[in-house]
Image 1 (spheres, rainbow, N blue to C red):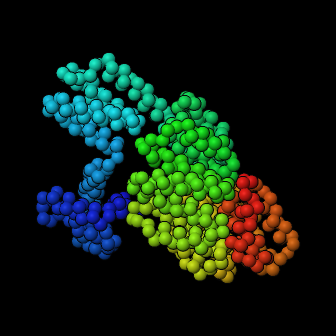
Image 2 (cartoon, rainbow, N blue to C red; image 1 turned 45 degrees about the vertical axis):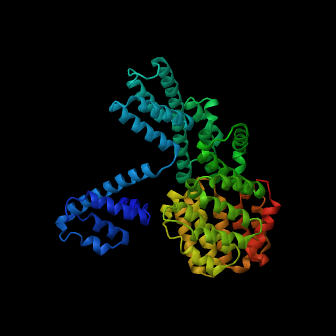
Image 3 (cartoon, one colour; image 1 turned 120 degrees about the vertical axis):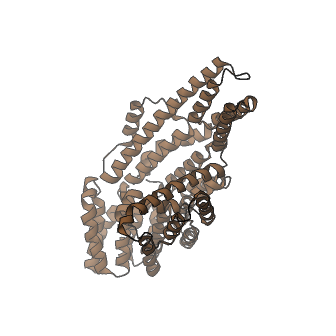
Length: 500
């Protein structure tokens, strides 16, 4: 999708109407084609786009038109965002803008009142960059009657700049850790999380006190959660989860930290889900939803992620029908502003649920809706997610008796991922694939005691104790037990509960 199409996708029907009015007001000539181009992009009319300018010589004019339309759309979005946002941060920013305007026009008393209110808001929100701009503005006009004491202003500015420096160091450390995660995700880099965290904290000279904020706790938990997902072992990050619980219990919650607090609850719910502590996971999800309902922005942002974890909790506690219904409803309620990654997560999960319950035709139908390329999935969802999705597709095709297609997918999978899996010491995936292949080539292989012993031995390894890995193993066991994989996986969940 090109950048202009991506931007227009952010507009709802009312926004599109307002944007067209915005363009009409700006158009000074009758022959401007920006409204026509907008309509063609909305309808995805390729022929219309090609005939917008008759001659190939007018390619430059066409691209210039696209550039002007994109610039206008960015301007419209910036104005809309600024005007429609009701957050305290934007309120503070508006007060700074109007305060500057009033000072420039000698309305001094009201200007300082605006800046005082903006400072209180910015300080409460820990918006250090905005505070810096505001305090510099106050210093610039400190000579005017009614201005604050210069020394007091200077002391606050220096203190705030120290806070800015601390936040900058935390952001640099976070960016470095995110970059390392990408190396693990895409290139199979081997990293010890605890050692990496300690090295990073020392590198950026971050103190223990610097880490005791909602934002830094969120950032650490985000990194830890991603690392555990890659390693498929959430026991590795238990120490970070315990620290997070201690932090939440010892700090008073503020509305200004709502995004971080909801995010932290999401990570905790996911941690306990993956550790098979479904009761605690559901408890955090309830707390998360209670907070989401206090602010419509965050309800929209977190809704799909919350529904995904809720469905997984239901499914793995033997409420498959309720879990499937919840996912179907969530997918049908997605909006044009929903993140594609969140939608794909719901789709793949629904497909997996249906396949495990032997709902073959419906699972195959939903599988066809996962239409993006492996390259897109690898970049947006990560290598592990994409590998799981491909394995699931092989199993569904095999389950649906599409043997040739399943074998073809196995060949494609090996060509694309074998080198990566060997590099990351994930030979168990290749072992699993070879066991699937044996069943496809010789269905009676599943009844061979040696084959069954190999499969059951996989259950005894700690790295295979993840809920998704157990689901794959259950598919193999179901072949000889002549049950649905779901009927096999539920007892496995109960038997291995809290052992990971």
